Length: 155
Image (cartoon, rainbow, N blue to C red; front, side):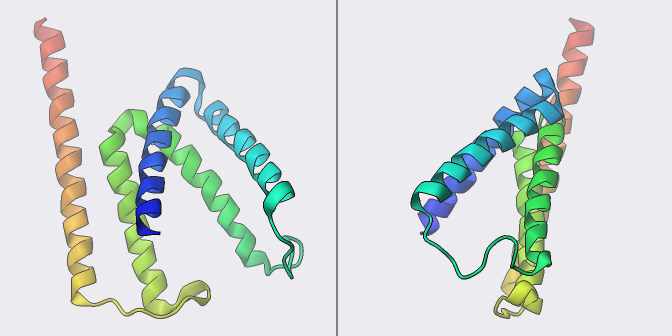
């Protein structure tokens, strides 16, 4: 299962890079619209053909559980806007950093009905290492941009 999740993360990164380029060419909202339109179609077909019945429906679950859909829209709009501006690696590490920070908070406090897993020293070290990776990647991107601008000016 862990390999499947790693693969899905790789696909998410590729999708973000592709959508970032598409968003730069046709517009952020158009790129996000295409993703959600195709996602709606595929999800509907999958649910219609394969999903077993459940005790609750989208209309009967607690309303706070519906907010996750809005977070997906926010993520898509931000990543399509940011990817061409900060680069694929920096945007991906920034997303992973946000995911790691939030997941550690969810685990530590048991939010959303999840089991409590306390924030220990190894988890704190992981946060620090990821922060270092983000800073180094971002600085590397900035240095590369300065080099390209200098080369363009000196021709």
